[in-house]
Length: 365
Image 1 (cartoon, one colour):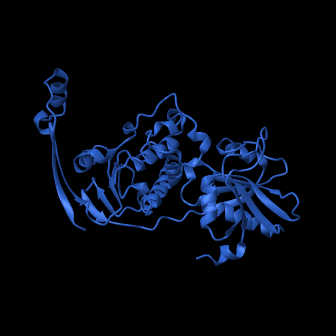
Image 2: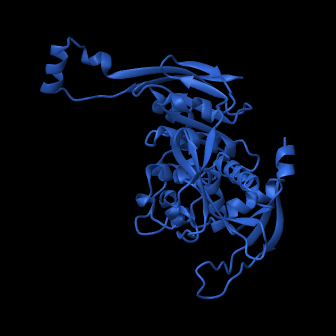
Image 3: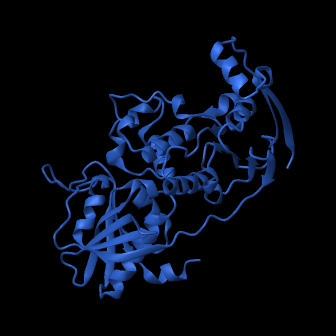
């Protein structure tokens, strides 16, 4: 990989003061020595074949300074987006963007929760704000984005999942952003972001490195209906849960991440349908939902069900089921169903029904 060398000197002139002189005297410091800093670093050139880079190191080691000099206008932070306080998150994106573009970008970075999209940015959790800002970066019209303070304000599990979701999107051929540079102080995201190169400002060593993302091992268990309370507000239709529902909870390292409920299908003896399906926003975008959905279907078949179906109008779920060969489309209605006054009506949006095919699932590579 061809690199370019950066020699950066940052000087700051300060007026003399009693306080500064006092501290310099106490610690025997020369103020002139600390008035400037010099950083020398090697970075891969933009015209090289890389997709994701990472500048990582301790606070105060020069990460942001190097990024500003190397990427200038491409440096992106949450301050780049003037999120409105009295409008929805969707309305915070630039006017020329369409609803489909915005929701696709939010879904791509693992923020697939329509109820949250209808709230203002400042009311979202740190993890949701982080994903929303990532989506804004992807829609910024830039082919290279350098993202400062990457994952600095989010829970570390959220940081890992968010990094993996972003890497998946950047490496997709459909991504408008061709190169992404993350700048942050946390080393725990390296294995999840899988960068092509890393500049560590603790040593100023540049290394090529692309790893396989660590596997995510989930535990799927039957659960009591009360577990739904954690997930109800994230469901895109109703927060209600039928009292006859059979419930499943997926855990990652003991943390609840997904919930599925099934009900008998009326008029189809021995068949069941998925009635509720939610992956918490902090854990979306890395395939947890698809794995949990298939595992639940298998559990239901082992319990004696003849067929398992899911009917949904959620774009992300429809998209997954259309791609996965083990979900066969049984029906598709572009205008939905229902009548005025029905709480579960979906008039005006596409609705699709899919049936689980266990043989295709087990034969899949």
